Image 1 (tube, helix red, strand yellow):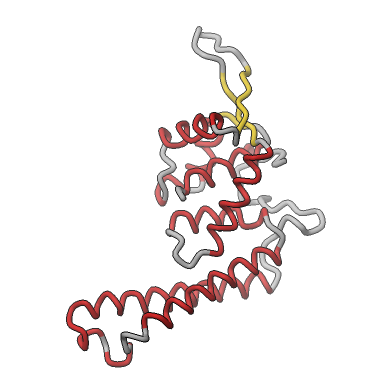
Image 2: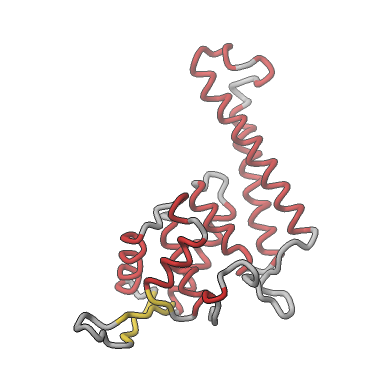
Length: 205
């Protein structure tokens, strides 16, 4: 799934209602344009597309003073919220999740209850461990990649990738288990406090 859908839905929800520039400003503030396809054109296209799909509702506000079209603010519908949480859960639990999608999921993980986030990350870890176990049925890391010619380098890459991603996932699980960050189910929760710029807060419902 494209990271842009999760990013845009999540950014809209942070405001309750947001126009395209606010969404763009948030995502650029997080550097999302550097590690995902969240470029200005993609953001505005995603907003319009998801409005057509019934995931967002478009509100016309503040008619232009220079004769252009009125500014549009977007708000997530019930279907949009369902899609958002589906994308978020998928981003966190999949061991084959692309890096930009995983990064988007991590950015919004605190919208879930702490225990649910942990469950999803443990699923990801189990998937990584199962993937490694399949690879080493055909490849012995102790003997090195040369045993299978240059194709062995592919399997060596898979083993190193699964090992490093599993180690990182275990570390994240440990930090969350230890009480790091604030999650949606916690009393007085303000998960994004201190993370967003002062003018990017607002209702997320």
